[in-house]
Length: 414
Image (cartoon, helix red, strand yellow):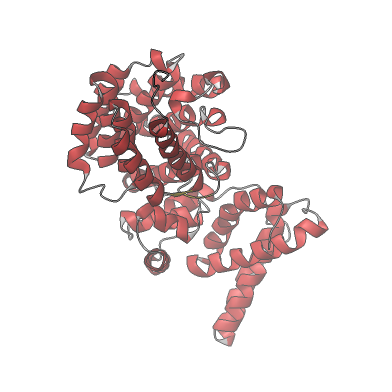
């Protein structure tokens, strides 16, 4: 059932908080998520017609607890069922402003889970992504991802670890997965991998909110500060990334007067402070690159040699083929398209079939003046992406090149 945008945004914001309350109280992640989903469905059905309650979080908690209690009553023996129901029944005032989202975030990154499972579960439970969107991000079938998420919830339940913030070394071990999860959530919101919208601000906004929470908890951690800086410096460009009809506008063509200077100032201050703390990590490196882009008054003023150097350091640090792809773009801007195309050759195996490899090749062939090759790769990229705005942009690029080549040559009059 469709709901208004305001109600949808409110439900997305409240869902992980309500789930955190139920997991803390009942200790059953899987059953708690089912109960929360039923509460969200009830809210989506009633709120648009009856109005949003004065305490929406309390309404959702009460409704989800009733659903959870009903599950317990139907699944347990009479004695156990009555004990559990008595324990579960909350006092009417148990709807305080306590936000369990951060605890939920760390619990999803449980040591009993593989990193991939922890990331998938957190994207589902705390980030609000659908199973299909998560599967697309991991390039696996939706059924495979659904099984992975289900197994992850069962492992957390079987571990018996109480619901609460980890401490000391355990917190440090989970933190890397937590940061990776937030990074993926932000990316999905800033450049949605599927569907008609380029941005999903509810996701990028939630990732920034959660990153702020983690930074407030761990203000001295350089990578936490680096990730938050990266998000802010990137999100600052969002107002200029789309045109009047939602079409994608690439970085080189954006109206930089529309960039959010407050976010740029905040992000720059964060990365400057993070770099002063010593060891530099991958999120700090990415934030430095974003800051160089944001500091340029125009695309011509961009310090591409510095960006190329930073991408080289980041590639050695991570070995990530997507970083190598971005380094090839920077190399083309510094040394010409032939240098960039040469750097793409080793990426055919790790990124074979990924639309971005074709898109970058198309751009570099266009820079080199090879129109036919550029058109072929723009079309291949358009066929492989599941983002409609990106598909339309790539298709339009190919069509414009074709129109240019089809124009008749000027001939002298007979």
